[in-house]
Image (cartoon, rainbow, N blue to C red; front, side):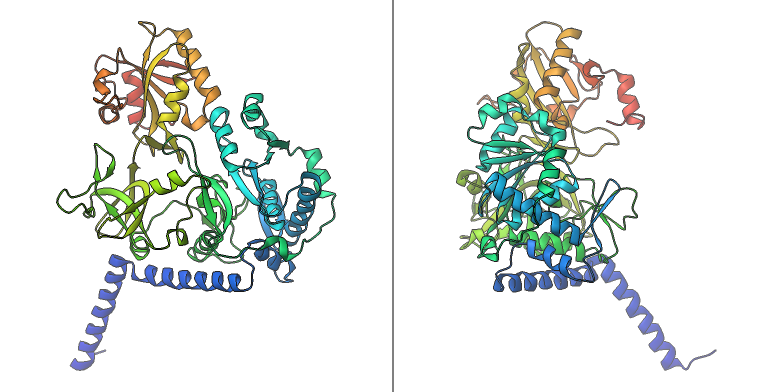
Length: 531
């Protein structure tokens, strides 16, 4: 078929316009931005409406789904072959709520610590606390010893409910460190007792939440600068996280949201999850979209590698934005006259809260939140995680505090000095823990290394136990004039035997540290070993 010239020209122009639009959309993620703004706007409206009705507590969302005839019988939780409907969840939450008030004396406004692995019981207790107006403090079940005791104390809770699977972590030493706290191991027998209570719904007066910025829960940091800190998670953050997780992935009511991460971590607090046996349509990933970040008034700033602080121009005193492709610290703009509107800070720790706020960053009077994450933004708007600022590294999706690990290792009788850092490994994400160590014996013997490994595994969370040991004669070359340990040279050398010079390397195998040889490094390079 032959078209007249004007029609052919118009068709060609239209095709060109469509191709151009498709390119611009792919290049600048325009469709993604439009979806983001639509979802974010709807989320804010929903939050506003809940606030006006005095129903900010997300317990009311569960209640509405449970009492709705179209959703009550549908599954809310899928875990290890068990399916729990909205209606069943709601009824159990009410029963647990009565048990919490009558048997444990929990009242509105109380903080209750939950030391739990992922499970349906964890979620039921969490919502039961909300049902009676209390606030859960999520404790990372990997913690033990001093770190666990610190987190429990920082919560100010008078009651801690403990998963039987991690009850051994709550040792007598921990109990002595946390004076005045009642520990309840939620055994199957106790669970039956709680489920035998009446499903009593307490009046709305016990769940009064006046502002979206009011505290919904406490979730701990991974210990970026020392011990973990309890971050205040507001109702606004819960609403935003829940809606952005579901609507942002175009989830349908029939979909299963599957996650393998800790539910006690901030990224997972509003997620639903299912068992591997179910068809999971949505897998939770840690994905950062550059265009979405820019719309949230965020940016990357250059970092001074020596001070590990955002770099400031000596002439102006202001920071500089990182260029495209350049690594920089991720920061978020805050309302300078009302910081708490967006950042509620750390519970009971004003000093730590203020340390996360930068002022006069790009102009006088502005305020920004420091994330501590170093990212890189490419020309296509994609964002890549680069590293953590300060004495931390990320391994197995957890932030590891080098100061905390070094302190624990320093308690071992054979350790004179320890410098802990993270090293990159072929075919592995994040950084694996390594410690450059000075022992009180000239040579490391098998007994000393086995004792050190046992000490580390007993005192540290599993993800924080160093996988590598670098035996050095002294650490003077890695120390500044102010006695601050330097890590950048050690990090660059990693555990490649060809770069370690005269030092001896060991790695954790079979519960002890054994020699790490060039052949082992080659196996890592070939992807034959997975740690």
